[in-house]
Every structure is written in C-alpha cells, then in structure tokens.
Image (cartoon, rainbow, N blue to C red; front, side, top):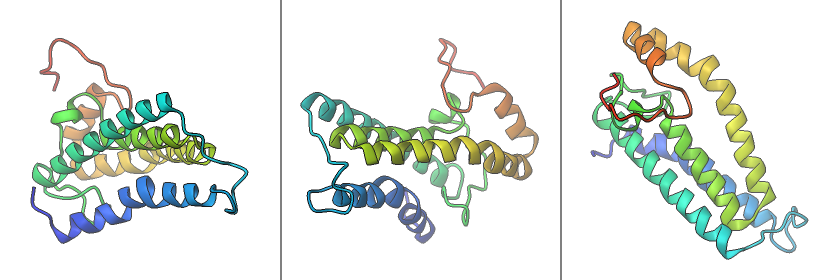
Length: 171
C-alpha cells in the first residue's frame, strides 16, 4: 500500500483521534487527581484479554478496509479524498460499513481493557453518531457518486451486521 499524503492526513484526522487521542485523554482525566477521577479505570484480567482481542480484530478490520480504499478505490476514507471507485470486495462483501464496525470494536475493546465508564460512554457516542450520520449523510452521498451500482450493492449487503452464507459469490 502506498502511503500518500492524503492517506496520512485522513488517518490523523479520524482514526487516530477517535480511537487513540480521545480515549487516552479520557483515561488521563480519570486518573487519581484528574478532573474526572470519580470515573476510575478498573483493570480485570478477563476484560483485559477480551478487550485486547476486540482491539486487535478492530484494528485488523480498519487496516484492511483502509487498504482497500486506497488500492482498489483509489482514494482514502477521508471526505476530502474519497474513493473514486466503489469498493465491494474483502469485508465489504459481507457488510457495507466494516470500517466503522472496526472502529466500534476498538472502542469497545478499549473500554473493556481499562474498565472505563468514560470510554464506554465515548463508544456509545460514536456508535450513536454513526447510526445517524451514515444513513442520513454518507449513503445518499454514495448514491450520488456511484449511482445504480451502489444502489444494487445497498440492496444486497446489510449495513451493520453481516449475513454469512456458504455462497461467497453474493455480489
């Protein structure tokens, strides 16, 4: 995968902030003596293991989808440099928003790892915004950009929860 300036900029704006900077800030604020110390972290080995599995899965899914956007779609996930070609391979065969599902996995995993109510609230806020913004803003934009091919894809592939079948040639 070639690292273009647009891709680096896209990564720094959304994923790094949503999955890294903001969760780190919330953890820092909830430390003893922090402004949100009444929401402390609670480390538990089982939650730590489960959280790390979710984070690893989410990061892998995000990496794969970003790679497809740059290699197949000839763009990035960022609104200022969106894919110029419709991407309907890899995880996009099974659901229309695997990148956002990857982000959700990372955020939920982080909330488990740190046992943090604040990170859990951040996870719920990002989920809520996604559930609203993707159908209201992103999908109409995709219909405008890609027309009938996207509408056909939209009719066949679920938005959030994959439908797995023995016949992988769904599209």
